[in-house]
Length: 257
Length: 325
Image (cartoon, rainbow over all chains, first blue to last red):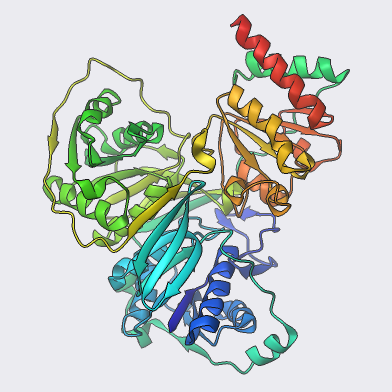
């Protein structure tokens, strides 16, 4: 089976976000594989181990993203592709990313493409479904279970807490939701092996794309932090009195009950 | 420049979701005096058209087909695209719901449009409008501008106020016939779990539990309080990891990001990832035995105490309030 995983390099969830001149300060921050993409990688490896084939992880970004691809290879992916846009693009949006990825995948005959259902930084969740649409294949988002039998696919997806059981077929793109699996940690032998696994680097030219083809349709003009939340009142006294006071405050002062 | 804007009306159990009315209010702003056209897809939705108009739509176009009874991206995109072809809109607004998140990138891709998703606020109302959306799960916000072509946004539930219902408003409700076909997905079963009560993303009140609830049963008093306040239940990752509840309840950077009017966190210490998911709630109440818990730093009101003592007392107090009201 020909399996591809879309991977994004994101801020570590532990990082405190700081902003300077309307942009997020990235210097010195730790970066990780987007946590939802880890579920996608894990599922891809599991499917390959069961059905045979090959797992290729793809990312778009700069040289730095190689680290996250090596981590995915150490988890067990077979090959990695870095589409390096550093020299070509200053601005990207979800259209840009989806266009580049779908161009790369257009001649690959992918049976299964996996992605995280959302990236924890931008949080738009658009890229997976856009890529599927551009490739003309079906997609299912926020999946929590995947069973493949030949080309038949049975899926459970999370819909705002409810579960839908779906039947569909390959080729297919799915986006991974929490609960799909428990991503493995790269093992030491895995890490050693990953160093020798193929990591291909491409640029827009190699995909016969130029900047106009992928020009962003939206533009971020400013980034800002929410107003600092001031610590409020810790109530005091007997617990019963505190609770009475709290409920009164919620009713009369905050007017939320 | 005034615009013609399409708004998808989303239904659950045969009634329009509140986010659809909020989407109409957003569409009004985006239209800058143009026309707001509601779109309803389903197998029996004609009767809901009037309500969209009462909430501000100028008219409504429906697509009815038995294959649209349940949402599938193929079915709904065929229905919505048929309306797009008839109406040729300059902007589209969806709710940022499970359905909106699933369908909007497909429609945007079909129309080669940009998509500004999860919008919480709109500044300005002409072509210079700026759309504010949370990034890094609400640890920061970005202002996004639409560059050119069709403008497409999804709005986060509970952030943009719906217009007041005006029962005197009227408008046309017309239909488009579409031959819905070639669905590549069949939904064989829907298992209702979390949304038997109120959906967390749209709830005005969320009562969340952490490791401090100590067991699945520990959520029961929280559920009772949530029910009493017409709210939903939520959880921290700690509670989910400990198997006290389903992951679908998780609030935080790798869970749901919520912005209710009132958030009550019980037995939650306030890990940075959890706070990313709830710190933009309008009023935050923290109940924790540990006075050093991080959550007190963002709470408007805090009680240092045992949730199993505090929550039942709150239930009694709220009940009293309801009796007197």
